[in-house]
Amino acid sequence: MDEKTRGWINGFIGMTIFAGSLPATRLAVGGFDPVFLTAARGGLAGLCALALLALFRQKKPQRAEIGPLVVVALGVVVGFPLLTALALQYVSSAHSLVFIGLLPLSTAIFAVWRAGERPQPAFWLFSGLGSALVVGFAFSQGVSITPAGDLLMLGAIIVCGLGYAEGARLSRRLGGWQVVCWALALSLPLMLALALLSWPASFGAIAPPAWAGLVYVTLFSMLIGFFFWYRGLAQGGIAAVGQLQLLQPFFGLLLAAWLLGETVTAAMLATSAGVVVCVFAARRFAGRAPAEQRANASS
Image (cartoon, rainbow, N blue to C red):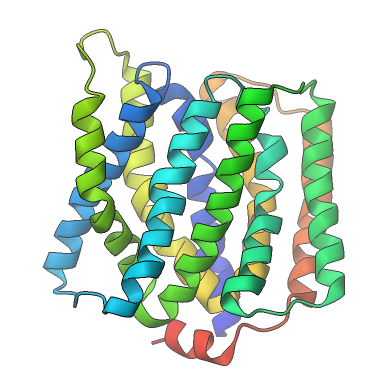
């Protein structure tokens, strides 16, 4: 199995894990304040990250790597979780599909800017078409404009795309799981302080589904998913593997159907098939990951 195929497998596993993030966040904000939820998931994941770094005796990042790690932390540890938690107070999980469909484009743009990738013009055509299919499907489900929630989701997509691209670029030197662990460790003081400031008056009234949502976004969305995702981006190319995010909304809907009893429609299945075609077409024209990236990702 070649490096690029391994990258797509790792990316697919990471995407599948992330697909549960918005439904789990939706469950969690039913019982927790969004700021506390963000702080708790980041703080608990940060403690796990510190334990892993100590257990495997990882060297501290060099001074030149601290800045990029801060960008990763602001993007995927603080920014995306907080903005989506705030947005989900105003919009439904289905509404968020409009913006999740734009995440692959955001990631690809930052891959060009921050990682020096150069996809072919046809890549942008299929990536844009895939995003249009996801957004069109979301609007066909009766999504309406919600200014506050929409602006928060748009900000979440921008900072997440930057965090993905910057983290994957840094993974060339540090390794995928090390990047997210160091980003979580850097964020830990802020997360603990926010958790104390937003500490609930009582935990007694918080229902089990909210606790389950917190556990999922802490262990899987904030930690384990990134082990596969960053490695996949580094192995297969940020812009190319990032297109797997086009499938994330549909995996999320399947999870919502399972957890919340929502119906899986023929339109959803048909749109999913079209998105799969776009993902594989975009993969063909994405170009190869930079040589340095491939070499370090395989080490």
